[in-house]
Length: 105
Image (cartoon, rainbow, N blue to C red; front, side, top):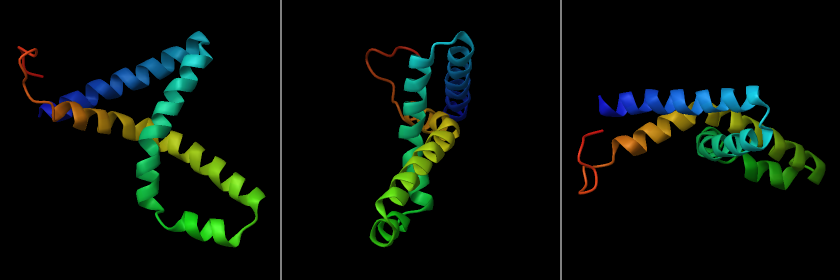
């Protein structure tokens, strides 16, 4: 139950921060948020297409490899926008009560 609540809280924080940064015109900070979402989305995307990159590197020209990598980065950011709250909620839900943490999450 704690993990579900933390997932929804992290979803509200991540999506709310992204919406606020884009509306306020702070595109540098929004770029950092996009990069963080890409960081969380890359492993999810890799689980969907694990051996495709080896096939692509061996059999297609360099220009198409660059296009493939750019498309994969864009997809990782888009998937990471939805995967990041779940990963953060999972990590926060695994935190145990320590000496500095007097209340339960």
